Image 1 (cartoon, rainbow, N blue to C red):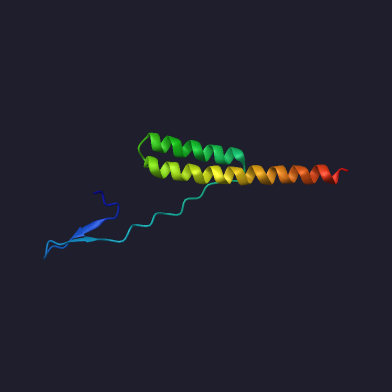
Image 2 (tube, rainbow, N blue to C red):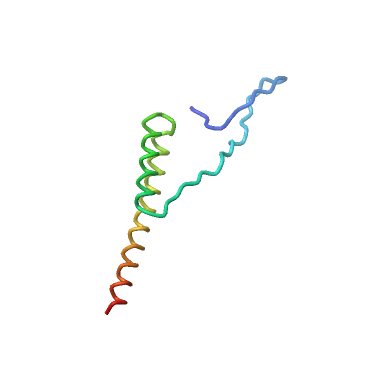
Length: 88
């Protein structure tokens, strides 16, 4: 069974102790437009193909990015409707 958390072996007892997970640096990217989301999805795909990111993690991230894309699309449609209704 693979353990994703770091471990430490006690030098006296030889006992294996699981350490708390190492927190990574906060990742930031621009996700204000469909182009931004597309670029981020492409980055996740390339990292998964290169073995830098686990495929299961990449799948979860892609699902999150798809949700962001739907929100952007919905807000864009809403904005366009408001513009059209304002012209009447």
